[in-house]
Length: 452
Image 1: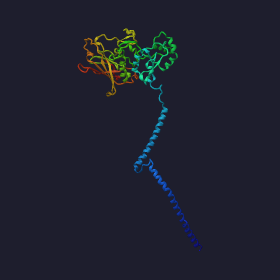
Image 2: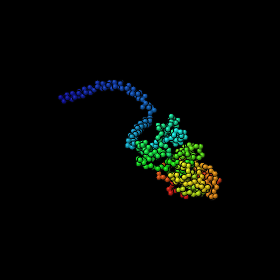
Image 3: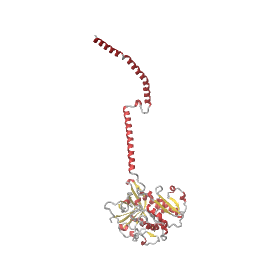
Image 4: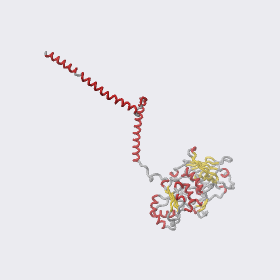
């Protein structure tokens, strides 16, 4: 009995437990409905906000477009990271390798300060010479005058001239002339400390260049001779000097007012210099007036090319050693034909009519890009009365009217060991045909020389 009672009691207990679940499920359904009642409006509001968002493309957004958008965002992020990495690398590189200062950079025009002394009485003529070579905005320098001139009150950029300064007192100034000289910054600083007293210690010396040399001697600094500074007083025709220019860059010319025009066919000295600076000096400044000697073997002519200036053709065979000596087409400062008055060797102008040189002056120059940036300079013969000659060697004046010279620009010419360029006769004039000679000028090839 007790056992049966126990089983009955257990069964009742089970029933009572199952019956207790019914009211609890009803409460859960009521809670879920209440949550949906509040969540559905919030979900609808979220969908509307997402639809109007610029980051959602609506129904037109395909899986491919979504993938592309994700890829674009990833690529943009990677690019930003790459740029940030590169910028940081560049910043580190800049910190490690700073830019060279003005003292460490290669010497250029910005490192040079030009000092020019002139007279206001001659300024109208001298200023045109300066304009031919002065480069506003690229060069630094001053012109010192004794009195104000028109350009003193004008802007320097509009005049195309250096800044003009007026000296306060010129009564004790020495004569400033010569072909110019260059002073290093360190030497200029030392001269500035002792120059005033040094000038008075040498009253017998004439000219600022001579006195500066004396002051340099007191400082123990030797003079470096540069063949391109033509510190020589000449009169007349400078053809002989420029046609046989030394192996050095042409830096200065002296006493232009007492020399004939560099190119005789021009209207004035200024126009002649302008032709030189606007042509060869602009296209290849390192090669101006550099001499090359070659030969036309068929006609037995000696050809001397002073690039950018003149070509001299002579009958017969003259050695390069003879051709590199200037002809005495000029006089010394005292207007005397004294060959001992020069600091360099010279040779007389040929008196033999058959060896009278024919001179061809540069008429125009251009850069021919079709020939791989070759500079083409053309030279025309200066007309002269024909000389009687019994030689069988052809006369250049009878066959040749124009010379064309081809040359590549060579800005590194003076960074190498000094050596003349070589020239080659490409074509020679024929009787009754084209009265033109073509010459190629350039760096000497391996084993090449001026063969007689």
